[in-house]
Length: 223
Image (cartoon, rainbow, N blue to C red; front, top):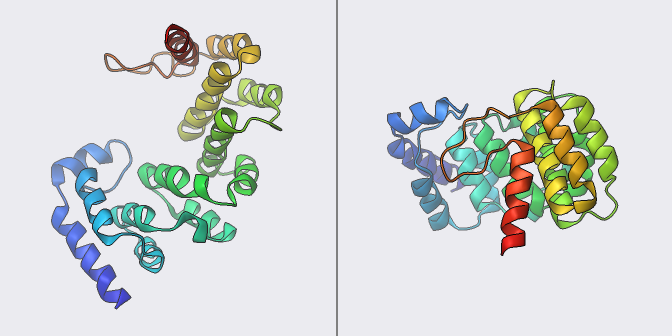
């Protein structure tokens, strides 16, 4: 029954494949061509099915992994299972969804945050920094914020893209959420120039930390 269901889902995703969407996604490193609204509709119809989620993930197809993430039960995964899945995620979209939709809701999130942040693989380490940013915002108690700023100051400029982006997000969140560290966070951003020239669409906030911090603080204080 499960094998047939996996085959059915894979066939449906194949039917939804759009070459134009794939071409756009591949420019961002994502090897799938399914409209995400349609993909979410498939997942909504399937509802939560943990066993099916595991089988779809094992299928190795990025679109199937995205459906798996949407239909799984995050708290049902073991710590080592999540570690393996992160290393198998491949495409940035699958990686980001796994961290945000599954790992952040897992009872193993903190243990994985610590382990991944120190991992030699920069893509794995980027997941650790994403979880750290979540704690900076929602549960900063016990975090060494000055220590995090030390690491960011020393390592962010030369970090690979995915890790650099995650560290920059953490830098901005420290500056936004913790006024006592805001001046230093802005100063680090200004000194390192990371993402300073990142192309930002109109009406969007630049990811350059000094601008990002200032804009969010301005909005909050003006509210």
